[in-house]
Length: 569
Image (tube, rainbow, N blue to C red; front, side, top):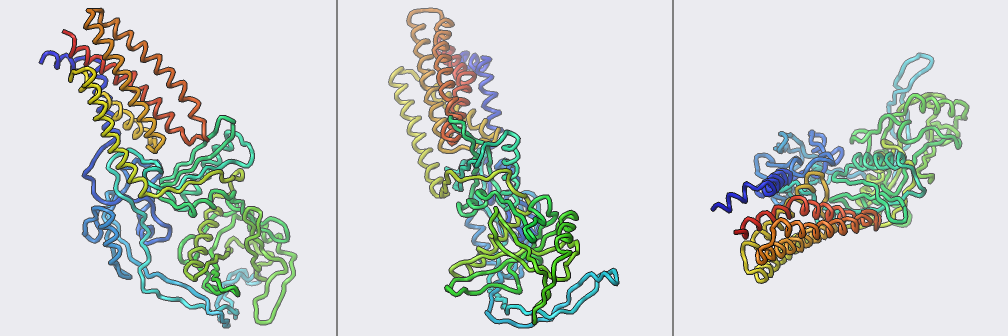
């Protein structure tokens, strides 16, 4: 009993215990957590209108907002959530209780707009500024439009919550373990550090505006000095982000080959709500001659006063063209370019001649093999264009070097297999150590030291928000394996000292001289790997360095103290 007291009074052991406690606090384990965590919230959805917001990318997993109940029905897991959603009716109120409050949503009907390939003349009342009266007056106009039909599908529109299994710790899983998309991009030309910082900030903003969370955007490089940007998006599909990331997003509108406005600073507001954006009600969707479907979208934007004045100057001397049965329009069109490619051209109404209008409409299209696919593609194109108009262009064009799309099912299976194999490895090591030394006083402290090093590593990862992926797991294995090797060196030196009645302190110093030499050798070998492979194996290098550092400074000195106290008579 006196030896046990001496163990817990030893300074090195006390330091190790305090470090373990702090690591557990950082990990914040809670295996009994209930509910489903919110990954992101779709724009203009019922959830967004009801006040639920997407979590911040920097939020720790355990602080993520979780859905606890819906209409007083407990939501304990994903199955409970999807069972409740599948029974929803149109125009029903949903009271959603989360860990951060109570929200009231109203379900909406899913509406489809299709084109009937017919035309009709429609009477509209449009407010127009009259310079003679110096005020806005209502003007009656007759316009020819394509006849459209609004189809009430009778189905409930998705409420807009993207959810996932509630995390039970603050340990962030990498894409290899939870699924998602990884994209490695390379700037088309070498850029400075300030430009790289601007590029990364712009990309983060763009992805957040687009509605994606759990986003990691960081600079990477290789041993040849090439610059890269690594983007990891959990839970996202490859097609969702590939085009958005690759495009520089340089948007501009011209009249007569002269720029009127550009995306970003020239645009003060972009409408993304259902009342002023979506499928164009005057055009809708229709079939092409080839049998495919095409849909046209439309949304409004607000220009800065400077851009509006530039538009007024460029239209002041244009001719007005009149055609029977159509609205009068100007001789030049407003042409839209995205990354120097023409994407659309719009007639400019005659009433805008020389007028500094700040409110204009932007339109475009999408296509697909079916009407539903065309609607989806059209709305996706609209969403990307809106994002680019809000965020502006990236400072440099990016080329996609590599993309990886990982299934969440694969990640779950890997975690199960990794835990199983890890447990077998620990048992095997423990048995071999016991056979070698035939002493529980050596084997049991070694087992606890391995667990200590693992807890310290995971605690640091949770504290700094480092993702645990395949590379990091490989680093953990290396760190713990190195730790076992070092503990065997310590045990051998202590047992030799016991047999030859040598000075214990000299033996332990000799052991730690060997350990420190091995530590510095491993750490130096890991440094080049921080930059190799465009930084894709950076997690392996960092985890290995952190693991062996914790082992050398905290866990292994504590192990030496325990074994010395237990074995020394």
